[in-house]
Length: 330
Image (tube, rainbow, N blue to C red; front, side, top):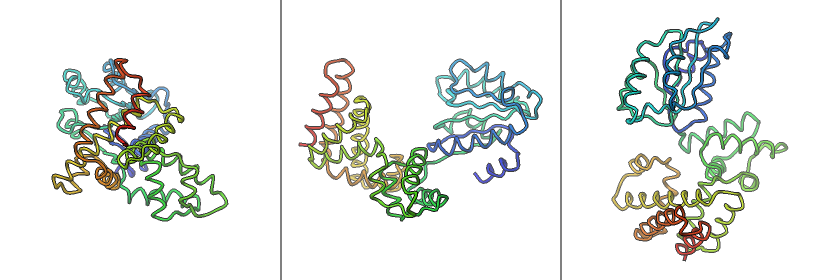
């Protein structure tokens, strides 16, 4: 990443770049800076092409890559969510790889993905030709420091424990974190210290954390609290289909967690296999203890059955969700 920063600063961005990873906020920020670095003094209308999805645009993408810049030194092509990394598009992938081999030195190509398969020919070709950068989601400790640094720019301070509470409230998506920090700074314009009470008063709890709390209440047999949390989500206009999807996801996650714990898997291995930050893993380990293995298996099965019944119209989704919550918080 330091090399990319230097290239942006020195205006030495060139060739092919693959940006991928979970941390889309920072990825997009670096992408914007890199594109701006190349486009200084150039006509963006004539020399910048952005393709949001590949679809049937492969020929257009290749044409854009092959086109020389108009009244400028460089031409930039940005491709987001390229379907060519998928095995089903093998023939198109070969065509694209061939185009990469003859890309003009005047073209700067940015390929942006959520995730990539490092075993593919396309990945290996890009890695050989250009630069591959992974934007990993920050861990809790890094996020705590990041939050403190952002608040310090506004002459605000936050204790480590309070910063962790903030993360556990709003989630670890950086775009959301920035939005919620802006609210905290505006609300605390006359005070220097961010406190836990203020976070609870004005910050919007992430849907993931609300679902986690709901399932937690189910495991603790807190039926009324679980139903209240569900009704809160409905009031916030969260689609019932998404609520069911998230509950299903959480049941699957804590079932996997419980199986790994019972199997004696080390925490680092668990975090890697479940693709969870350590502090989220710790929360799931605690939650898994509130359910028996059979309860989790039955709960996941009934969630999946409820999805089928609701999709086929055999059950009204709101009623189905309420019955599911009542049964597993008894």
